[in-house]
Length: 175
Image (tube, rainbow, N blue to C red; front, top):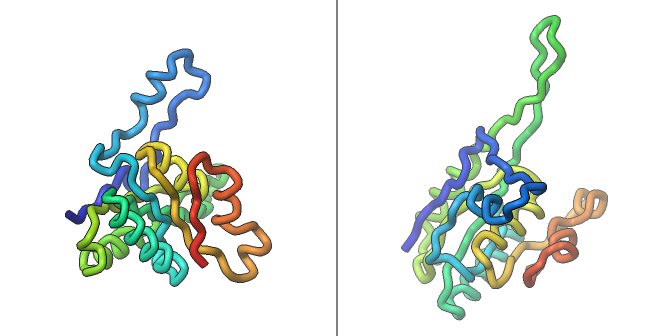
């Protein structure tokens, strides 16, 4: 079984539940529902980089061994751009990243994904928050990510390090 789930279009924002709401059930109902076949699956962050490909390979093996589904998450780069229309104040607009469609096509053609059921989930926003959110929605057994290399990870902190500190479920970092 192979598939794709685009839980939100890249050019639209998701409605956020009111954290001050008195009824937590209402907050639960406002979230998009997820496929129950992938409950207690393995979440893996994937962006097409070498480290994310290694993380995907590990996650495939983990999902195969545990007879669970694989939830592949691509957090789209939403680039803020400034639009200025004459006398009006500048407006910030999110420019959608269409890389998810390309990744989805590449994954759909991949032979190595034929062993496990999988879905591709697109999100926009902070990578750590979105991976943990998807893990919570699917009640994932683990989140698998590739390690960050280079100067950007040293300056801003790696996604894997931030996720390992804040996640409420096991995080596996693949070098």
